[in-house]
Amino acid sequence: MRAIEFEKQFVTAGIFVFYKGLFPFQIGPTRKGDQLGVVRLGGHREENETPIETAVRELREESGMNVKPIHSPVTYHTPSWNYPETKVRAQDSQGMAPVLIKGVNGEYSVMYFGESMDKPVPSSEARAIVLLKPADIVLICSRTLTFGEYITRNGIVVEREKMDRNLNLVPFPQLRFLSRLLKENPAWLKGI
Image (spheres, rainbow, N blue to C red):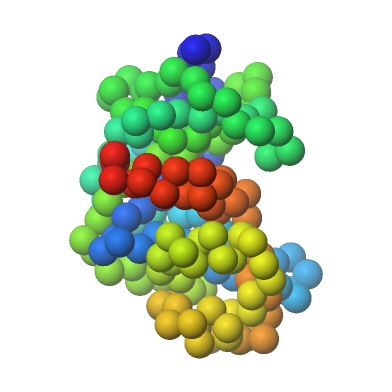
C-alpha cells in the first residue's frame, strides 16, 4: 500500500463529525442560487496549521462545535473527484490518520473523522446545518430531493437564515464519498 505525505502540502481540511448518531453538514445556495449545496464542515489552512488543527478550527467557526478527532481505520486517496479512491497509508505528525486525501502535487484536501456532544449552531459562515442520518446521506446522494422533502421525512435542520424549501439539495463531493463508504460497508461506522 502506497504512503502519502500530506501534512505540509495541504490547502484545505474538514471533518465528518458524529453527533448523537448524526452527521452535521452545512447547506447554502449554490453559486447560481437555484439549489442548496450540502457541504462538509471545513475550510482553508491558516498560517502554520496542521490539517487537524485546520479542521478543528473550521468546525468550531462554522458550527460552534468542539470535536474529539478519531483516528480513521483506513485512509483513501483520490487525485480528483472524477477518479475512484484507493487505500493508502497516511498519518499526520500527531499520529492521526484522515479518512480521505484528495489531490496531487502538494494541493491536498484532507478529511478526518471526529465526535462531538455539542449541538451545532450555524455561525455567520454557515446559513444552516442539516443533521444527517446515514440513510439520509445515501438518499440525498442517490436521488433528487428538495429541502422541504428532507424536512418532511423528519430531517433535522438548524437554521440561522430561513432556506427555500423548494430548492433541491445537491451533495458536494465529500458527502458523495461518505455515501459510498456507508453503502459499501454499512457496519464500517462501528469500527470507528
